[in-house]
Length: 218
Length: 222
Image (cartoon, rainbow over all chains, first blue to last red; front, top):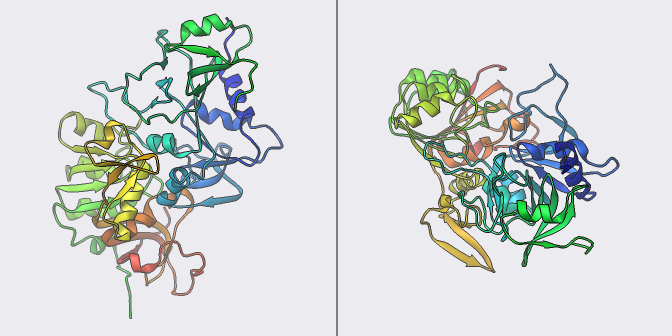
């Protein structure tokens, strides 16, 4: 079984981001998407700590610690960038101005529920940051994650067992084996990684998986 | 003559009372008002409720205030970080109360306080445990949770430049919570790298108008 590499996953997500989009890339795996945005497309990256027009990391030694992303890594501001305060920044999400947000996840249900902020473990210190605002805020919220956990447990499920970040908020999931839309019918597979059989993905998915390949999805 | 300039950080924070709610600017260390927090530690106010995006980084700034056992409760969005060991220790020992609030709700609840809003319906967190048992309502087919403002007795903010009327500009993403916190506190105290002459800040570019600022103190570039 030939899974998508991290790089291929990032490139696959990037391919679906249209010219002119305002996009927020979540902390972790989604951050990699920035490195694969197709050349020639003008796409504006938002970071919720207060910057539109975020550019790549600066050269080593050139970091400015007043210029960081939501993961508190040093970044740069592209020509045309804008700084703003937090209430404005979250208005951009909640107000439906941001086109796309890509998030990591622990679990996604076939109703589009997202769990990505808290394992619910008794000794865990809860920390949510902007996850709940992002989950319900952008016009389209996509998830990018491994199809199953390292232990092989389902992450695409009927019902999230971890505490929810947002209800019915996810429209598409990009995994290391497939691209899956969430529709009123539930999970619909629209693409497989090369060399993966649909039957294998069905086994890896904790809820019914419909085959939507070849049918043009939205 | 209006002159909000205070000569040093100790005078700027001298009257902060025990039990105050203190809004602390900053996202991680960007925009963290280090000099003002050090002055609060020296001043001795205790039993504080702190409102800040994070719960301190490393051993300086807010982390130092926590370490000095001055904080009863912290309201924040993201306490747990790789360098939040001071908070983590206090929390696990049951020595500090934590209220986790989604980051955008934190900002909007502060904005509501500053704007005189009594409460507002917000979609963030609906159907999650952070909505608690607060009232919910469906409006035009969408579900919302009732959220209440967060008022501060004091705000501690870091900005780049200010004048004697309290007009402020910030630096890059260090702006973060500064402008909303300045509106939400009875007394907003601002440390700036540099105090400039009245008129030196372009009125078109002022980010926080001086009406929201009560005290301003120059601390030099960090």
